[in-house]
Amino acid sequence: MTQDHVTQGDGEAPGLADAQREHWHRTYSAHPGMYGEQPSAAALHAARVFAAAGARDVLELGAGHGRDALFFAREGFTVLATDFSPTGLEQLRTAAAEQGVTDRVTIAVHDVRKPLPLLDASVDAVFAHMLLCMALSTEEIHALVAEVRRVLRPGGSFVYTVRHTGDAHYGAGTDHGDDVWEHGGFAVHFFPRALVDALAEGWHLAEVHPFEEGELPRRLWRITQRTPR
Image (cartoon, rainbow, N blue to C red; front, side, top):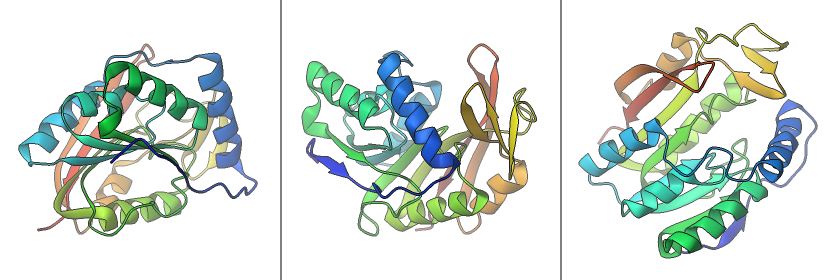
């Protein structure tokens, strides 16, 4: 893949998810590289899983300014990095050039409420760090995971992380229903374990690993599942 800028899902519809998109635009503009340059612990784990499975092509959903996508590229994977914020992806584009990995990174502005801009069975692995627990309904999350399965090759790996209902912010702030709570301007869909299990139906669920991240700390699950061969 090359670093072409593909735009998907530009159609506007009123609602919480659209308001959150604008909030993330402003946040990335005000705080460039807000998560730093080091990859997340989830990405370190995912790279090991992907390498062990012989993966070469990685799709990252919700790449933001690209700390994890750039790490995957430095590890030798070919990466399609998607996000609904052009601002974050432009920061990723600049960093990719600085790090000399533009030949292994493609960026695409994409709203995950829309079908993924990929053919069936076209990637080896998919990674999403705290993307599925954004301002998405349960129905939209199920549709997204179905899209992930569609684009993965047989035996492909999906590693994702979500904040869960044991998190300190669950039940705090503004209740939008469907386990979505808005706190400090950020809306989060907190996952009960039943939702994780439902999303893994028809997959091989390899791991549901609890961990903590950040100063609160945020409480998350890291889920690893694979498509049947």
